[in-house]
Length: 321
Image (cartoon, rainbow, N blue to C red):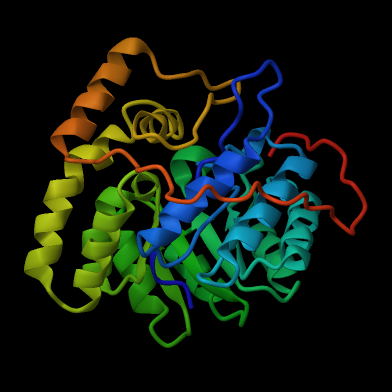
């Protein structure tokens, strides 16, 4: 169900004292990404600074995304938390808003035991919306082991894993052990997309696709067609840009990059801080050398994103996620 290039979209903020959501900028960014042939979109992930969004903001970002995409590609909303009750609330809201699936990071900080992880993911999957697990030990402090993934993959609503462990042997084992299930393994690291797809992975939830979606799409399309020579050439052509997306903590570099090419970005919210001058110059040099072009103004100005009023009760400000 979920394959190809799914940008993990940034959440643009206004450069005002309260760093309000830039809803118009979000809609314009989505219009650009859709024009480049992306296969899906992921709002409110870690790249979207979900940890600093209130419940109201989180829900609004998903609503604007669903409205703007309008069924053209799947919308997979980030709804994870280290609090199962909070993740349930976010997942229900995403489902009611019209998201096609949810991306659920493994609980961070708590370090749950195996039975706790199984119960956590099962409770969310029982909400009857396609669920992608997200394994990123560098952020969570805990790895989702292949045998655990294989067990959870048997649940009919747990349809994929976003794998960002960086362990190619582990990723290969997950693909091997879930071949009999209707289950996808998706790269969670742009640099690992080529080898993961070569092993049988289906695509990437991508940071770099915010900046250079066309070439990311072309690389994945080449892999799907078995044109390894073309895909490998694109992999190496993209590699300097992919590395540049992580010269500082994600999403600091990608938010600066989208601004440098004329898209809506804005500041990052504390405790993250904006890219410094030295790294900004480094990033600009990579964008120029990589041939990333400035996004052209839309021929016709799009209408402002319509006010989206939730029919559900207003959620309180979220705690730590």
